Amino acid sequence: MEKFREKFGAGVIGRGNPYKGGIEQGIAYDLYELNRPIIQQNAGKPRILGGYQSVALDLLNHFSTQKGSRILEIGSGTGIGTLELVSLNPTCSLICIESSEGMIELARYKFNHLDEDYILRRTNDLSLIRYWTSFRSRSLEFKDNVKFLMSNFEDTILNHESIDSAIAFSSLYHTDLTKSFRNLYNFLTNNGFIIWDGSSHFYDDKDFPSSNYGFRYNDFLGYVLDEIGKKLDLLGDYRNLSKPKVNLDEIMEITLKEGLFTEKIAIYLTPVDLQIFIKNFVPHIVRVLVPKETDEEYFNEVLKEGIGKAITNPSALNDNNHKYGIKAIFKSKKI
Image 1 (cartoon, rainbow, N blue to C red):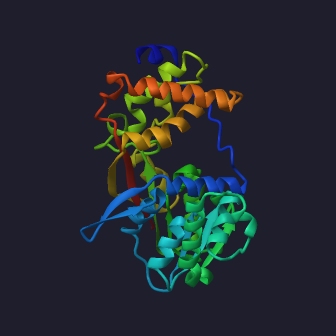
Image 2: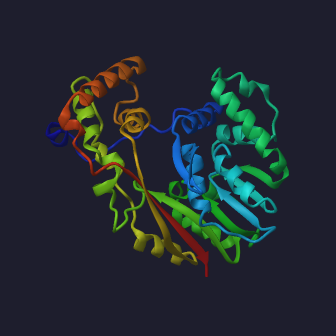
């Protein structure tokens, strides 16, 4: 562990999403949803949700709007949160903004705006096909409530004061906040609002700082990288990938300048299972730290070996503090 800390500095070079722009990105997004189940209590009974579905419902617990409202969803992805939103607000109309062509095409398919057989031919995963079939059946009654627009939100043009309320599931913090809140001030009616969230690699909470609790700082990852670093050159320190960018005071300052008052209305700490951490997060974080020209087959071989050695090292499993996903929920209201 100390070897890794001493060898690498602060700079990190990101690779970006290899599927951006194609239908493959939407498929990868939905596969990730299916492979990251979350168990929640509902009326005293446990239920299994997808990871993105769980995020959406966490925000929707704090979202209330009038019947017939015009709702804006920022970063609608493949429509996972959209379906939960419109199901709870069936009299409302939704405008859904998404910048990825592949994601929005799949969302349109899932909401019965498209009937494209070629999407089904892009996968042989029966669980994914069953999921899409179930989704299309559930969304059919809301088909005409929802409109999808492909755009970066900072560049989106909507009519002045044409939106009553807005929501952003794990997306707004990927935008330029100054431009986004300037748009929101223009789009929202008087007293209009947005409910949005911030993850621990964006927002640093004073009571639950990411460096003390966030799973992305877990020592296990450092041990994996120590092993991988013996065979591959690495581009930076994994801890800098998750360094938060802003605190609540800084968020309030940004939004107030654009005419919205922001308050933190909730914070969630979700325990992350080590098995889920290894399967879903470790490969992604490590891949960002490996030169993009690295052969994929060799990378997977080295990664598997590094994880295997870390798992059998008792010292790598001693970090019982950094085991949470930290998510704050904010409400920003036009003033």
